[in-house]
Amino acid sequence: MKKIIITVFAATSLLLYSTPSFAFSVSVGVPVAASFAAKDDSGDSYKADGSSGYFLGVQLPFAIGLGMDSHKTKIKDSTWKIAHTMYNLYYQLPVPVVSLIVGLGTGNSNYDCADAVNGKSCADVFDKGSATQWYTSIGFPIIPFFDIHLSYRSITSKNVIQSNCSSCTKQELSGTITGVGIAFNF
Image 1: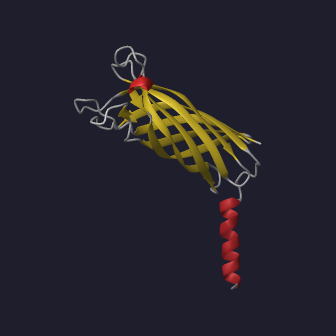
Image 2: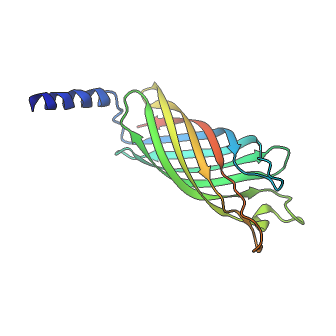
Image 3: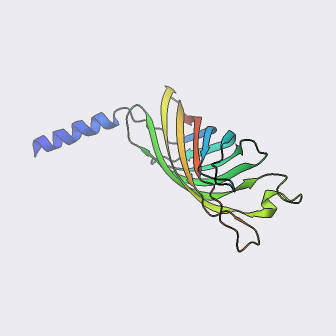
């Protein structure tokens, strides 16, 4: 019994010796790369041509956090973009030295354009579809109160459809987003 207690104490000490004991953490990030699973009408995959937007996160004292993502990715050789808005719940794993986060999110996706059909915008032509995502982030401390992090998000959205069109097929706007950000711990 004594060996078990000493082993558990030693393992816990190794795992938690450098885990930050901050009360809150606020993080901000931006997308840097994207890819699509979406296809055009001829069946060819869309190519991404730059992303814009933001990722926000607030971590509470007990390693649980809430976040919001809003980003648009331009479709190559087009004026159209694919827009996602997500609300997240995440957990910071108790790993020493780095900040390792895993999370899930839900929200919506749609096309974003000004010149869709007959002068109508995409919002007038397409209904928003529901979207889900899972993501992970790894942060490296640069000074005690800041860390820089890399994130990867995998988004699934398969139900964007043209408004008032019962015979139209559902569009798939799934894809991945890679981002960078900074977190402030206090």
